Image (cartoon, rainbow, N blue to C red):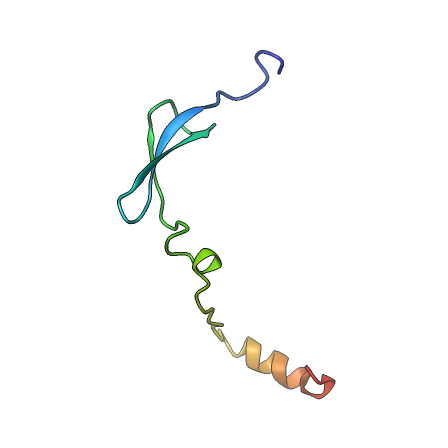
Amino acid sequence: MKDGIHPNYHIVNVKLLDGTVVQMKTTWGAEGDTLSLDIDPSVHPAWTGGSTRLMDTGGKVSRFKNKYAGLGF
C-alpha cells in the first residue's frame, strides 16, 4: 500500500447488546475506542431468521395489492 493515502487501520472494542465486547480491526475512531452497537447479529432478524412484519402505512400495501390483484401473484 502507498503511504499517506489510506486511513489508519487499527483495533477497536465493539460492544454488543448482550454486553459482550469483541475486538475488531477498522478505520472507525481511534485505537482502543469502544463502539456500542444498536443492532447486532444476536438480535437482528436477518441473522436470527426471525419473522418479518410489513407495516401498511397509509394503505400503500393495500392499494398495491388491489391494483395488481388480477396478475396471479
